Amino acid sequence: MVDEKGNRIFSEGKLNYDRSESESESSGTTIRSSHDPFRKLRFLNVNGTLLSTWDDVERLARFPALKSLRIQGCPLFESPREYTEHERRQLLIARLPNVETLNGGGVISSQEREDAERAFIRYYMDKPEADRPERYSELVAIHGKLDPLVHVDLTPEKRVKVTFTYGDLVEVRSIDVYRTVFELKTKLETMVKIPANRMRLFYVDQVMKAQYGPEEMLYPNKQLYRYNIRNGDEIIIDSKLNRFVSTSSTTSSIRS
Image 1 (tube, rainbow, N blue to C red):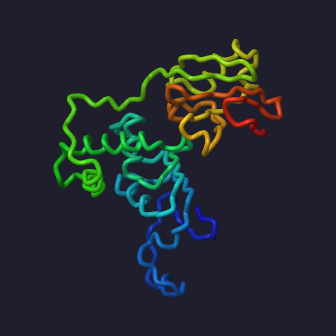
Image 2: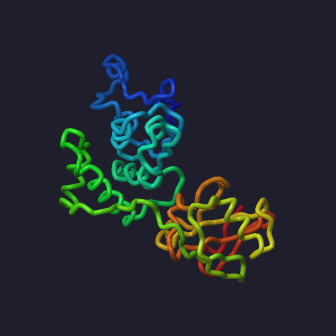
Image 3: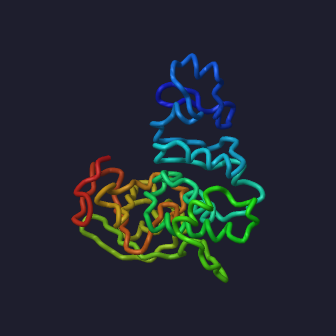
């Protein structure tokens, strides 16, 4: 894979952080680290690469401008299944302080980041000091030493109340966040009289809507909690036959 300037950043499925001294000299610039050529890298997709350790993830945090990261299907997250998907997300967020969106989900809120960083501290606090990553000390300096919890439930809330908007029709429903986007569309068929395969959904984060607006829920097999849906958020329903959808509570129009 190459970046927007044609520089190779992957080799045979594994991140390539190496740059020889001769390459650095021939470029006419002084390279302080292997990340220097990618100081403006903002979007990175490492799905299906050979990342196998948390050290590999921490190297990604050294790209100073990296804001959006996709990281799935890597050996680190395969066998043995040591983490739930939610625990894995928290451990990733805590290690990647500059990343704002992870695996195509909604923008990471300040509350989610703080929760993730605190969970990270508690995850490592009882481990031997030699097994604690450098990030542990950085986060302890920010949040202090936390009291251990008898039980830390890192799983997302199973059901949340969401406002569904379809034209002038507004309805508040409780939804199971472990359902997929397509399963949700199937449940909404009776409400809006639109077949699931002709329905479009747009997620509206009530905290971030002024800055980012609605996000189309494009992936039918994606579980809802991966959009970071919370109580009070909104989902706009539209038909694929329409040019745009209007609502008084959000952006006036969403173009196809």
